[in-house]
Image (cartoon, rainbow, N blue to C red):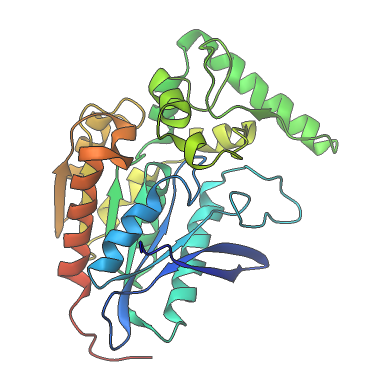
Length: 313
C-alpha cells in the first residue's frame, strides 16, 4: 500500500495548521526530515504528497502542511480563508520546523526545506534567515513577485489592478467582505490569479487539481495578488550560503519565468546546484519532468541530510 502519511496538526502562534507526516522508511533512530508546503493557491492534495513519498522511501521523513487558510488548516480569526500572505507563510514554515524538531522520530539537527513555485520563494527565505535548515530545494521558483505580476497582467490593466487593490483595502477596513477572484478561469478576460491557459489546464484538465480535489473552491483573495506584487524572495538567495541550495528550473516556464530563475541562481553562493527540467511551470508536478524534480530533490537531501548529527538538543 502506498504511504498516505499520518494526519498531524500543530500550533502556529495561535493558528492550527494541519498536514501529513511521512516517516522515514526503515529508520531505527531519529531520521532527517524535510518540511514542505505547496505554492500559490495549492494544498496537500495537489500533488506534493507524491514528493513526500519519494523522500520517505529514501529514508527521509517529511512534514507536509497546508498553509493557514487553505486546505484543512485553520485561518487566523481576523483573516479570511484563501489569502496568501508570504510572510505569514514563511513564519509557518518555521513553525513546521519546530514541530518536526520536537518529534521523537526526527533528528532536530537534520532539517531540510522544500518548496515549489510561490513556496519555493518561501523556502529560500527560510533557509536564509533560519539556520536550523541544513539543506534547501526550490523548484520552478518565484524569485520576483513584481516581475511575475507584470508578466501576468496586461500593461494597460496594471493601473486598474492597483485601483482594485486600493478599493479592496478601503472596503475591508469598513468591515466588508474581502474581494475574491478565481484562481483560474476559462475566460481570458476574467480577472484571475493565474490568467493563462496552462494554469486552467493544470486545475481542470485530465488528472488535474479538480480531479484530485473536487471540493477545491477555485478562489483567492485579491489582497493575495497585492502581496505577490511586493514579494521579492530572490533578494535572499545570496544569504542562503553556507546552507546547500538546489534550484530546479524549467527554462520555458512562463508563470515563474525560467530566465529570471536562471539569473537569480547566479546570485547565490556555493554550495549550490542547478537542475533543469523540460516543459513549463505545471509540468513540475506530474509526469516525466516531475520525476526528474523528485529524484533531484531526493538525492540532494540524501546527500546533505543523511550524515549523523554530532549532537542532539
